Image 1 (spheres, rainbow, N blue to C red):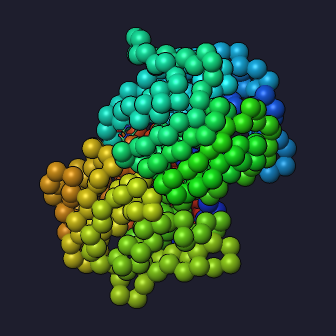
Image 2 (image 1 turned 90 degrees about the horizontal axis):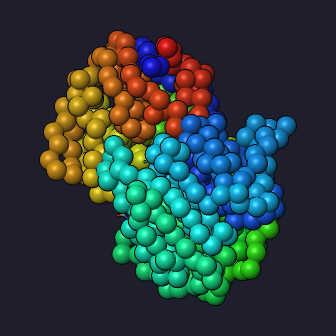
Length: 421
Ligand SMILES: CC(=O)N[C@H]1[C@@H](OP(=O)(O)OP(=O)(O)OC[C@H]2O[C@@H](n3ccc(=O)[nH]c3=O)[C@H](O)[C@@H]2O)O[C@H](CO)[C@@H](O)[C@@H]1O
Ligand SMILES: C=C(OP(=O)(O)O)C(=O)O
C-alpha cells in the first residue's frame, strides 16, 4: 500500500493551480444520465472518486470519451439507459454514488441503488433523499440492502421541506425535479456553491430552476433535457487546504483559479487566525500575516458557514498557533480521527464530545502516522510539511479520492515529498 514520506520545515513558495471540484464533478456526472444527448464537461479532475462515478454511469449506459486539447475534457453520452441498477460493488466505494438515484428514477421510471452504508466520519443516512423522492410520487422499498424505487407514471412536482440542509439530498431532488411534471419547491435547501454549479449545468440542459444558492429553490419540470457544455467550478476545499499549507509552513502561495469568496465563512476565520489572504489577478495569495498564527474558535456549519471539509486542516493549523482554539464539529458525528495521529506528532489536543480543545505548541515533530479519511489524511500532510524531521503517512489512498496530483503540486512549491510503494 502506498505511503508518503515528507521532510518538513520548508516554507512553501510559488503557485498552485486549483483543480475542478470533486464535490461538483460527482453530481454533474450523475446529471448526464438525465438526457439522451451528449454532455461535455471541462475541468474534470483526475481523482479516484471521479473514476468510480464514471464506472457507475458507464455501467448504466453512458459512454465517456476523453477529448483532445486541454486535459479534463470529456464527452458523456447516454442515448438510452441500459440498466437502472447501481450495484453494491460500485456504490460501496463512494457514497456520492447515491446521486444516480434521482436521475435514474426520473428518466427510467425505476431505480435499484445499493444503500451506501456508513463511512469513517459517521453513519450518513439517506432518509432525506428518499423522503423527497417519495413526496414526488416515488414508491420506495428497502430490499436486501438496496433502495428499490418506482415511479411508473413519472415523478410529479411537490413541496419539499428539509428539516436540515443536506447537499446530496438537495442535489438528488434538483435532478429528479427537473424532469418531473409540474413545480417543485425545495425549502431548507443546502446552499453550497456545488449546488449552484449543478443548477447551472441543468439550466444549460434546459431545466427551469430558480433560487439555487439560496435555501428556497423552485424547479419547473420539463419534458426532456438536452445536451450541454459546462466547465466545472474550482475546488474551494482544495484551495483552502493549499492556503493553509502556505501559512503553516510560513511560506506564501498564489492559489490560482480560485476566488477568496468561495471559502465562505472560513475566509474570516483564517484571517482572524493570523493568515494573510489577498485577492490577486488570477486567484488569491495566502500566507501568514505579520503577527503570526493565533488560536481562534471555530464551529463547522453548512455553507456559508465554516466547511466541515476544512475542519481537520484548520485544526492542524491551530496546533502550531499561539494560544488555544476550540473547534466544534456540528455536521458529522465522527470527524476527529486525525486527533490521535496529530498527537503522535506532538500536538496538544483534548476532545470533549463534539469539540476539540487545541493548545498551540512551538513545533510538531515528524512521526509515522495513519490516514483515516480524506480530510484527516490531508491534515496530516499539512502537519508533516510544518513538522521538524520526517513523517511517514500510511494508507494514503484516501488522498487520491480528493486531491489531484497532490505530490506534484506540493513539490512544485518546494515541499520535500515522496510517494513510496
Ligand atoms: C460528494 C459531496 O458533495 N460530499 C460532501 C457532501 O456530503 P453529503 O451530501 O453526504 O452531506 P450532507 O449535506 O447530506 O450531510 C449533512 C448532514 O446531514 C445528515 N443527513 C444527510 C442526508 C440524509 O438523508 N440524512 C441525514 O441525516 C448527514 O449525516 C450529515 O450529518 O456535503 C458534506 C457536508 O458539507 C461534505 O462534507 C461532503 O464532502
Ligand atoms: C466527506 C467528503 O466526501 P464524500 O461526501 O464524498 O465522502 C469530503 O470530501 O471530505
